Image 1: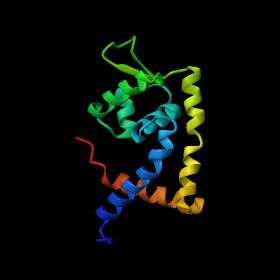
Image 2 (image 1 turned 45 degrees about the vertical axis):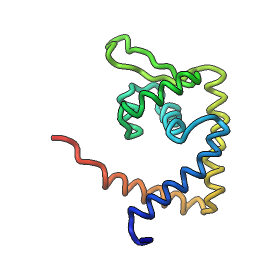
Image 3 (image 1 turned 30 degrees about the vertical axis):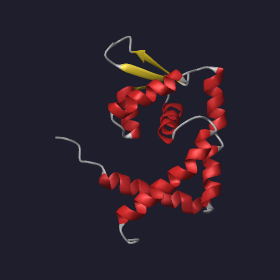
Length: 142
């Protein structure tokens, strides 16, 4: 079984999420909420659709996640003034929102420490997994 890609990726995913969970608990975020915040911090305001594309998540997953983040005061959902059918998601520009980003800044290095891998190996692993992701994406509809 340890030679089966499905098995090793499944176990690796569970174990990596298990490393993140206690670290994210210190900033009161779930792993998926953390990824959403990272995307918003990196890309700035995004439509819900745009955020879904960045995270590769559907709106059924995103909507409740964004409602919880909004209830925490981390993001604000606003209707696009040019097109009221579109919802723009923005990171709250408050002391709390900035403090969250600052508190979460140590998480990547804490994860690297738990892996115990040299940075070059970690970068190589990320590159290999990015290749796997690209190779397994569905072809765009014609």
